[in-house]
Image 1 (spheres, one colour):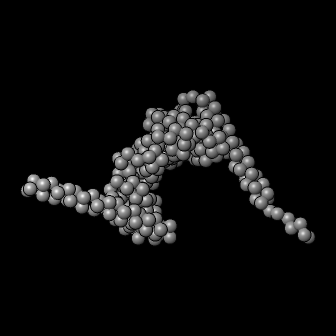
Image 2 (cartoon, one colour):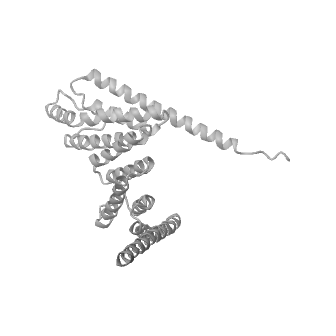
Image 3 (spheres, one colour):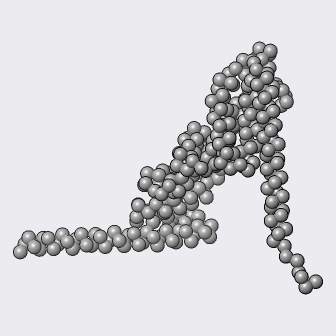
Length: 280
């Protein structure tokens, strides 16, 4: 008899636990819905509270974590290095990482990787940003945006130190580093050694973005800039420098051509939406 009572007690306890878990999941979804509503109305702090409550009630609710990370991003101010702002960025990154670790859908994982990369990009943590843009491109090889972003990072990483060194030499914007000048030759060699991997990766990444999106004018504009980076460190090979500058000019022309075509298409679309009053 005592054995039967014990079994019944265990069964009832298990039933209560199952019921409690089920209730928590329902409450979590209610908090998720409330958070989404607050987010849509731009009440981000309220949304964060609801999403945090949702993930506490149901840690497996991936959508709640995605929304929580997105709400933190909405509170983040790019370029501001205050402790509170950096803390907000890290909170978003932490939630995105939990999404990635939760074996989510491909789209959720891609968006989480992009979210992390975006935050690291704005914090100027180039290597970390590229790591997660690469993760996104591996998950979705047909998405041109991560390739474009890597190209932008590579150009930024090359451009800033090159311009700093040129400024130290007192060079004008239209001057190229000259191998016949001892000081400029030294700087050129150092920059070429330092920047060549990023220049090569950037050119490859931007070309890939354009292959995937042939009218990607932003990628074309940066490809022009990247070839100018390459040209300026070709101090010992003037022929290659000239070819790089011609290629850069080609991408300027392509950028303008595509932008013009897009503008004309937009104008035609707007014109097509105008209906004349036939009664007059």
